[in-house]
Every structure is written in structure tokens, then in C-alpha cells.
Length: 117
Image 1 (cartoon, rainbow, N blue to C red):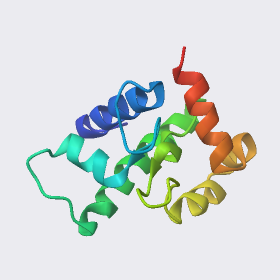
Image 2 (image 1 turned 135 degrees about the vertical axis):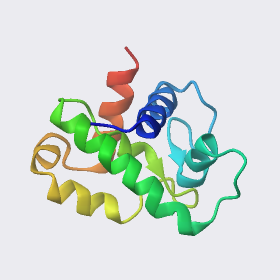
Image 3 (image 1 turned 90 degrees about the horizontal axis):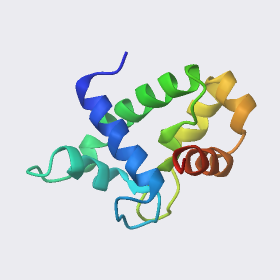
Image 4 (image 1 turned 90 degrees about the vertical axis):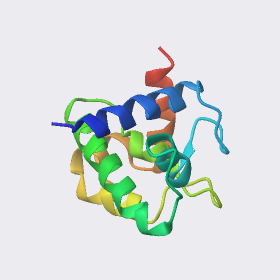
């Protein structure tokens, strides 16, 4: 079950996937951008990355269980436009996600297609 904060994060991620929120990388959101959507009054620091990862992993684990594409695939590093190294670890630990998506690109395309409806 998602916390209230994770529900809010998921709503933001869905809007990002739909292209409703302008971000540095279209239809993707950087960790810092996501943090600042939740805590606009706080200054971003790398020390907060683990909290963001916790939110998006919980959301994506729930999504995959419910046959939805993993929104953690569209949370990216600003410098690369791709998820952090932990994304591949998450994918390989989540057998259902591995079977359905195999790569971050497939997962991202699945998010964009699903939430474009």
C-alpha cells in the first residue's frame, strides 16, 4: 500500500508520462525535479536521492503487481536522461518486470503508451 506522499509522487509521475509537466527531459523527470515537486521549499541535495528512490521503487513494485508499467523508469539522472544504476538491479530482482519489459527503454515506452490513454 502506498503512503500519501507516494500517491502524490505517483500522480506527478503520471502527469510527467503524459507530457503535462515540463521537465528537462521530455516525459521523464530528474530526481531533483521530482524532489522539488514534493518539497518546493527545500534545497535539493544528493543526500535526498535515497528517499526519492524509496518512493519510486515502492510505486513501481505496486504497479508491476497490478499489471501497470513501472514509473521508476521515467525518473532519471539529469546529466544522462536515464535512470540511475539501481534501476537495472531493481529490474533483475523483479522477475515479473524483467519478463515484461527487459530494458529501461521498453519500460519507458510502456509508461508513455499506457498513460497516453
